[in-house]
Length: 609
Image (cartoon, rainbow, N blue to C red; front, side, top):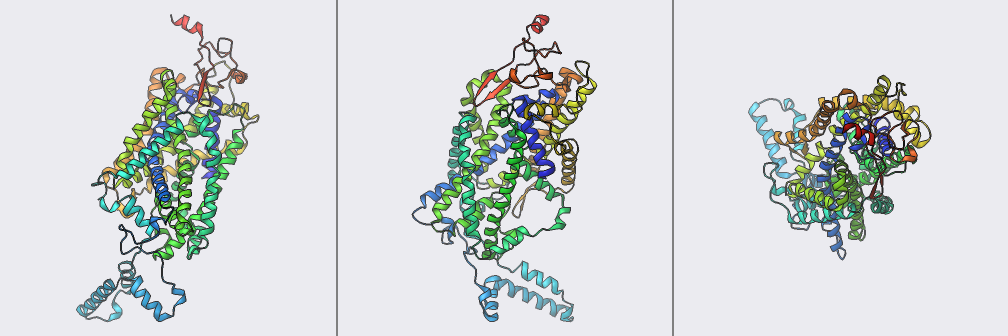
């Protein structure tokens, strides 16, 4: 998915934003009919911001708890707390050091529930006496199944009970039907989270760009420590073996490919508008091809490295709780707030390491959050530049306040269900369809309009965007990029969307399956961005006509005059040399400031009057 989808789209979005120096909405001057792509991107980023900051809120809460526990131990390190149940345990008997008699005694007293086993034997006896048949006719496989599934004791780790019974208080909720009251401690932490986000984005990109020198390197130190500690825990080999053993037969499952694509899209930020926003601040001659390769490869290598750290901890937890590795924790936030805290609790001075870990998690989350918020704010500001760009801080504060209000349902006692629903749907199918629309616009519509309806009478290149990229980096993209953009990437995206839809599985959290009406809300989050693309396209076609709606406007091209060469060369009045149409004023982004570089065509307004 990285090779045929993630990396090509990553480079494509970097190149588009850097070439035009425009945000996710206004950059689509290359084809006004596709302005809906930008609107959909801003919509998706807004939805993700709502629940993503709730995840950051949990990191802040754990960080505070770790800080106040510096003189003692972390509260999720033991089973002696008020919220713990009888199923909680921190260790498991060393069976490999026992003789067979002792091992059987331990298994019967610890591994299986005595009352359940006795009841099962009674049922077998009654069935045998009633049927008056030979014992060999009994279904022994069913007996074994009942014994292992019904009577096996399922232990839980201290970190899992701390997460579900203390932080979430999930046992006090009853699904979507009764999500319970708002957790005041979580609501207060959410306020802190949004205040921090506002502080990061109120002054723009220039100040926050300096922070990432620390936030991009600090996580590696913590991951190395966790990996070293994980490899010293008993049972770690179960997790590493599970992580490194391929299950080839699962490649036939569409969900596996869909999950891989979603992970790559989310990890690289493709389709969310973030790359367009950030690259619009780049210098025009920046080598974005090199940036795409370096960032994408380091990103995925980090994911693989982090996998060793987390699966060593999962293996130890599986050994301790008498579970299979794949069932130790649920998907979603449970990995960050169950598996990692469990490993940290095993370290000397665990509160200190916990504080550093969740501080790291906070920084990583904030990097993503304020980029998505910047995408949302910049996208809307580009539509109303005269008012919103001069009042950026108040508008950012307003967006953060709205995000806080929309996040309150997720800090109820059953709020994790709402968070899971949004995470399941808001960034899945719709993001891949947006990426497909980007490719159609730049690789098919853009060159076809220039070939069949050239403005100056001369047919342009079959792939004009390749020439646009050449203006920036000095050479045309190599065949790998072209083949993926034109053929492989769109085919793969269409295939994944179709097959994933055919093998669709409803959203769930643990053993709880979401009700149909909740599923309907989730599908609305999928359909809304896609509907915006089609709606804006219909409006633009009605407003401009078919040809103009799909043709580049006079504002498409480099923003600064010194870069407006060749087919983008402009007269002194700001119009393109081969056209008398007006040039839409373009804007060059530099740090937190914006500068107008276009000159309005006075002759156009004379003709209008």
